[in-house]
View (spheres, rainbow, N blue to C red):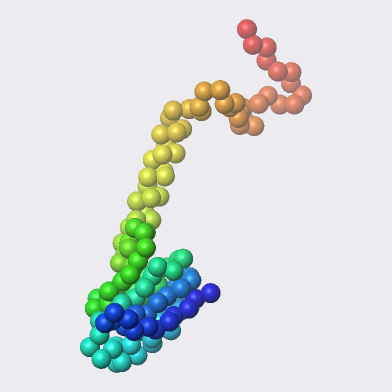
Length: 138
């Protein structure tokens, strides 16, 4: 669910967003923003993101356009401050960096071997055939 509410308070026009802001709602917010710009009567426009749970890439791009258009944001927490101002290219670069770090971590874990006290799984191709008795260990 997503909701947009327009409020005038403290010498500013506020578009309050609530819920999950996804691609399906970009056009709706864009229309509200355009209408707010026409009706702002010189008031600055703010977007209140304090009750937003999630912003997807398309939502982030819309918030970035609005920020470049002069909109200010009310946020809660570091994550929401970051979400509104990241481009698709930056997001894809971050995804690539995370994938590279995960790969390096897997390589380091493989080189270190299993943690002490943890049983080691033996690949099935290392086991003797079922018709052969196991090789005794000295």
